Length: 288
View 1 (tube, rainbow, N blue to C red):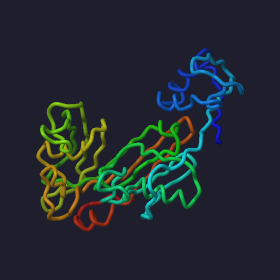
View 2 (view 1 turned 180 degrees about the vertical axis):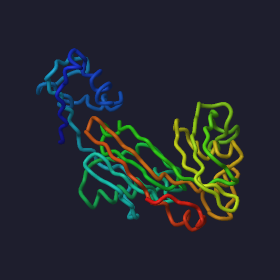
View 3 (view 1 turned 60 degrees about the vertical axis):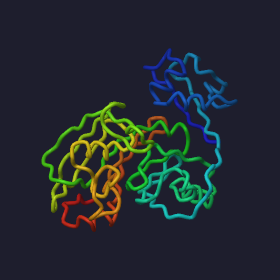
């Protein structure tokens, strides 16, 4: 069983374990609750509760239990960008869902990862830190334990939309389920959402965009772009045409991951897939 050790710094003298774990290490309440097993949380070698007061120089230890994979394995290709004992970073292919679901019981990222680790003998469950739509490609971060799942994530996307856009802009409009649908979203009533975009170039009535999310709503980029009259190319769910490409032209191109609890920080880039490059061959695609 792996053990994470932390020496309490002067600035956290007098803080409770709970306060230090959340405020300094960035652990979620769920992750902290997951340490409530015998030996899961030690202060100076003794079992501790989250209410225990810490002193500067104390040693806090968090144990990471081994957890078996719980998804049926499927031998599917994985494009691994990076891996260590805490994280697995992939370049997800288009057409591949992240989680198993009805109709996609054995062709998801998690099925493929289950096979990957079944062959390597690694016991850890992996947890996607966010979801990419089935037909959205690009960088996907997975954590190998609950503590790493508290990592801070920053993402940047490339997309091709219909119509010509210039400069940059910010779309702010709440997103919720469209009335009568369990899948389609629309702007109006719903949760606050904001998206920033920068136009990088144009080709035959299409625009290449760089986008960053200020919030993380389901289908956010797709819904916001349709809302301003520029649906993504190939995104027929939100009004885009499929003349050039048979799926939404959306790719998570850059990813930044930081996690103080495991002392990790990294930047990753995922190559744009051939279906997007080929469909818009004259676009000024960034070099990765």
